[in-house]
Image 1 (cartoon, rainbow, N blue to C red):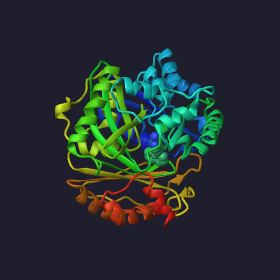
Image 2 (tube, helix red, strand yellow):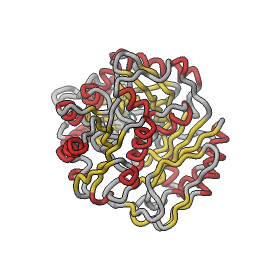
Image 3 (cartoon, rainbow, N blue to C red):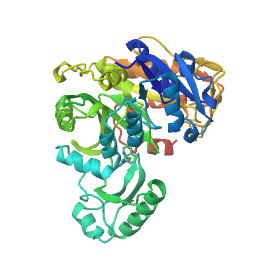
Image 4 (cartoon, protein in one colour):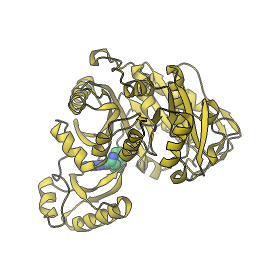
Length: 446
Ligand code: MV4
């Protein structure tokens, strides 16, 4: 097991990792920019190192500074959290070159899943259902129109180096295709330095369903059920829940075992999330995330597992905590991402938190690193905290969420709390009857 872990992140996930380290008896090193000197994870860590000025590129993405922090403190492992360097294969390799453990998947798997075309080819080879589309990138000399016609319009043009919605263009008819292809390629070149694009059948009103997996790197892997992340705004998840109100036990078992077998074949190491679009009873692979995700607490609440603690134990060579038969999904959990944003315009609202009262009571969890008097800096994401609720049923979970939202106080900055207080009373949400475009259509109607 590791002796000292450097947490190469900030905010609530840094605190989350620190908590798991403490429970494992592992010493902790916090790194921070000059803007985060008063952050809670800095206060609670055994040691802390300032790695640079506020801009992420000069601090949390500053690899030489992070390596120096490891050397100064004698850390033997680095936990990247999510975002920042968490899916940077080169960073994982550089750590290995310095005899440091990267708490994450093998660099080759990070690289593989970072290329959306290779990820899809791999998924198909491993027996995971994928969206019908081109077989790889559409080369400039290829007849994209013929490929599109064979798929059937509308088609979606996607950037190979994209992900998270970046570099996507819909072509509803043949007349739209040429412009969609050139626009997507130009944007991909500008954003990712790689103009490669591929085509897929455009699914009109799917749900976003993601399967949580855990692999030991030696051929053992289990799935931990799904999360429904369909409620998104501009590709930012707002509300996540598990189990999905749209998935029945048979479908869950089927797609779960397909994904688990694929991860066994891959000899996948650590936590991972396999993302699907779900429409008319069918799952379609779109991407795989090779990191712990923001919404991991939803799975923790319904399985009883500490995913970050297991991630650390497995990175240190440990075994999986459960066999597949021992995994049980109990009750229902919903996570609301409370952001420091205007609840109507979503304009960021950084600043000092004058009053802060988190909710409590049975089945209520707050993953947050803010406190009364904390100043939310303008340099990073606007997450104030994640309100996670659990209940025996979805109805009980919604009732608890309603209560917790009404209890929660955050003053001095604007937050998206009012949005959640409205959503939790919205009939379509109460019925679980929504898809990936529902939230933006709801907001447009407000
Ligand atoms: C799609 C799609 C419809 N059809 N692929 C958006 C980001 C990335 N995860 C893939 N995304 C999509 N891919 C096909 N073939 C619709 C989306 C999409 C989306 C997916 C999940 C959650 C929210 C979304 C919002 C807009 C578009």
